[in-house]
Length: 98
Image (cartoon, rainbow, N blue to C red; front, side, top):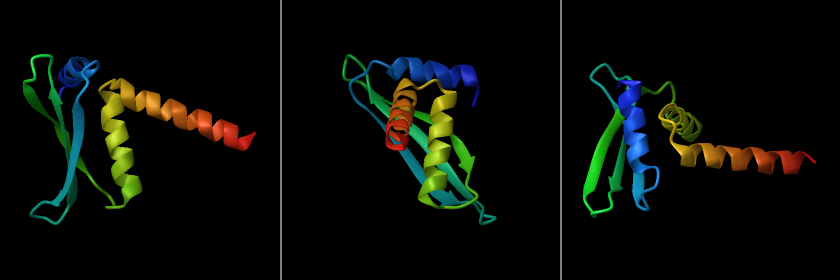
């Protein structure tokens, strides 16, 4: 999907109180695993929106692989909550090493 379109979706939901990230793994006809990612959010008038983010190939179906793909897709969108979570993880890891 075009990066500009994905960033527009991100801008639409940045300050919305309600959203969810949906991911579903499936195999295509050639048995290659893929991860479909969608975001569902509610605007200020309580209208529900569903946006397809993309299909991403899965090398493995492990939780680590799925999380890595989700983070990558959301970071490419400049989706701020993901960046904030990653920053908090780094702070926690730094404190753990002290």
